[in-house]
Image (cartoon, rainbow, N blue to C red; front, side, top):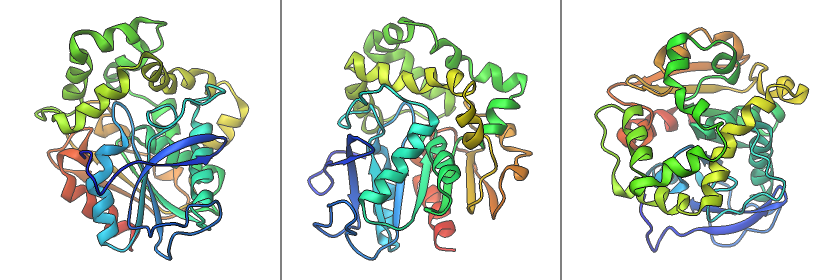
Length: 302
């Protein structure tokens, strides 16, 4: 999770923009488009908000030890990846990023693990190109149709921050006040009893100290209402997923409530598994890193 000599960002171009990524388990070279680094199965690990690819480092190492080529991109707009010229942070754009990335790494198909917004990217990629996505593991977010069209009153209350993020200017100011105290408290509230470490939160503060980068991260939330009015988004984001999927949730998650993961079996047309992480909240990949990695690897190797 920290910046180390053996794990430093690399840079590529995919889907028309520059992405930074962390990698464990690939051989040197093989970074030209269409050129596989090695024969290991590719796993893309996608972070959410407020987070960066650095939180995926322990999982990358576990995946590599299990025989995978593990790559964690910094999502579009998150430094050191580029700000997209078109300002598109829709779920479809995130899914297309995934497909472009696996094509760059020379893989015919890939497995995808996504947390939070990374989950939406995984769902989107699987809907767009089920022939290129071998299987997905999503964490902390149910199928978009279940979450967006059937939220309970309790979930709407828990998602209050999403409505605040629609306000022009207010979140950009509020989040950066008092050394990001509000944002740190928000993360605490999502994972009750967990204290965000500096190893996790330091890179988040560094990323969002740039107002344009913070605006980019908020752009994911601001793209949601418009996406739901677009026919293409309805066609892909809200349809059933036809690749094997394991959905992981934290049993103490106060951001996306555990009840929001129920009654979604009909939205998965292939193998589907729902797995809870006991005593963990929204950031279960950090709070219970070893158990989370076990649950990811056992499904990817099944």
